[in-house]
Length: 319
Ligand SMILES: Nc1ncnc2c1ncn2[C@@H]1O[C@H](COP(=O)(O)OP(=O)(O)OP(=O)(O)O)[C@@H](O)[C@H]1O
Ligand SMILES: [Mg+2]
Image 1 (tube, rainbow, N blue to C red):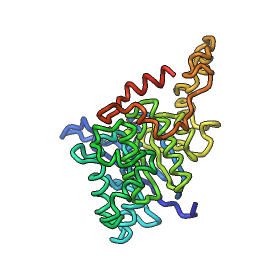
Image 2: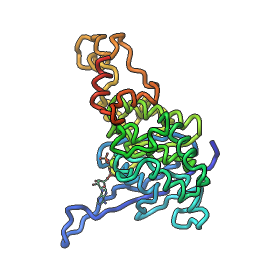
Image 3: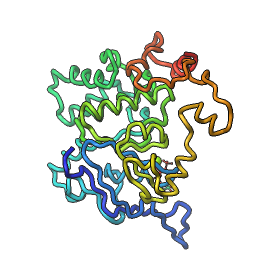
């Protein structure tokens, strides 16, 4: 990890005209309100907070999909609007995005090979003669193995988890330093969430790529993040490495009290009911392995090559 943060957010405010504003009485809302935040290279920083607290707006400012009304976002010390052509090109490769709904971030009319090939050609990532092998290597790296099978598929022929892997592969092709992932797990089947989370953890370790992970799932966040920032009403009310162990802000405590436990026995204890070891999937009382093999999503592939997530979830539950 280098000393200089890859992104610095300085006094950033994003003000919107309120959605129910009339012409006569304009009202404004600070979706992001005076946020200061450093994102260090290689770190996994999670952003949590209630719905409407400004997490996605902050992510858009980082990705330059939106601009602050006040304050600034700096990439390697330079405010985003001041980046010259070369710095802008580096920024566009270094900072990648992964969104909640993987199907909407892939063109439904393009096979995986065309979608990824388009990005690779645009950024001149591989010689034309090596392009297919280049794409296959990146699919294999996110656990889509054998990659040739996935290159020829359309997005609708992939499960949600596989689509999200393709979206992550597309981001990883550019060898980014930071992936801003806005709710990358929440549209996925619960049995696949742990696998995608594990892939992110693996990429962070092996490739030293950093993540800004926005998630409602506090358990997922706690399992992966080095630092956690808590947002409320557009502000960061608390940030740190161990704020879930020792929350200082009342809102952080409230979030933690409201979270559902991953351990059914703990939840039952909190509800004052007797614990029951059979609530675990395998009857051993242990929780499912979050490090399950990434390729496992394809175990339920049917004859046409597509996967029913429902079937997969059912079989996971029956185990
Ligand atoms: N384009 C916009 N115009 C007006 N208001 C907006 C716009 N985008 C977001 N907002 C408002 O800004 C606030 C923060 O929205 P944002 O999407 O950042 O929240 P969030 O924390 O990502 O919520 P969620 O967890 O539901 O995704 C909300 O009150 C929202 O209604
Ligand atoms: Mg959001």
